[in-house]
Image 1 (cartoon, one colour):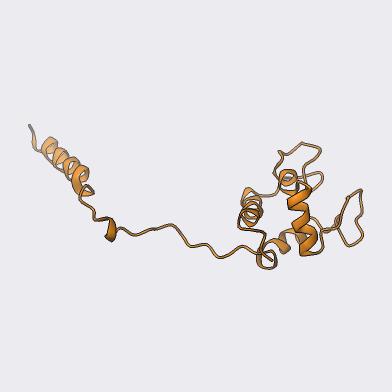
Image 2 (cartoon, rainbow, N blue to C red; image 1 turned 90 degrees about the vertical axis):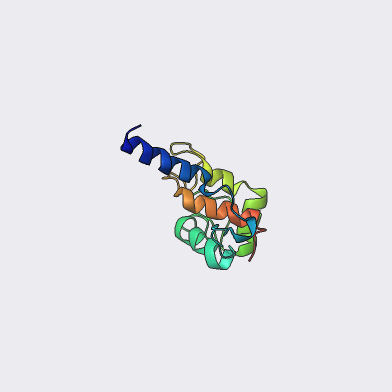
Length: 121
């Protein structure tokens, strides 16, 4: 076996066995700790920047409800399909904001995570 093959075999063998004896107590969880998602810190600005033009205190342009307060937005998520409407594909006539474009997926994910975390105010 030539020296290049020996070195490659040595490195591969070292990599193969390097992690086999890790002590679970010394492993580090590298999952980032995300701050708590709340309406006031995270969601209100999304609604204000993307929805209020139609879903104002007095809704306009055919909007069926206002999305000005926490209670109104929470109700829209729980009972009116807000997450489904913002998650539709571009070109779907039911997509919100009306006429698109679709919100960035990271923004949609934030609203989804807010719901999953309990719709904190």
